[in-house]
Image 1 (cartoon, helix red, strand yellow):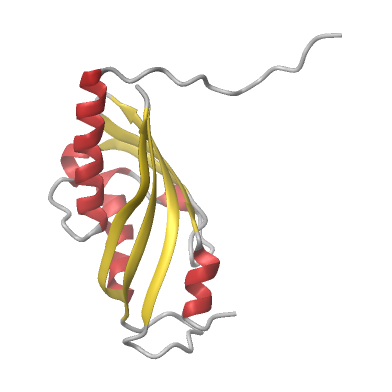
Image 2 (image 1 turned 135 degrees about the vertical axis):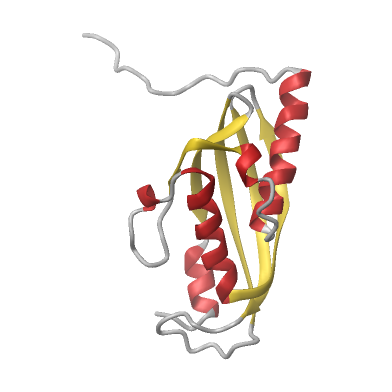
Length: 157
């Protein structure tokens, strides 16, 4: 009987150059999420794509390249003023991946369908980003965020 095949990828040790590059990518990644879209074209691959559960139930496959990411981030930021993302754990780096846990805090500005929270309500939610690095750019993104905590704070569901 053959042993089952594993699809587990073994981590590749990050070199010093990888670490410097990944730390720069992380700084710019956080800048984008914090509303400075300037570095997006330098750090996001044109082939960039997202794996995420979208708040509106849509398919994240529509988020492509730097323009798609910026539009998605801008849409989120439009509902929350003073939204700040900070690294809570990490980053964890290897040659091809960058992983971090973040915490976001902000003020609800209104506009979520079904929300009973008043504009001005403070929100806080967390998530984990897994980013694949290719040619010193971010090429793929897996997002796992605590959407249920955010929706509860907005009084949805």
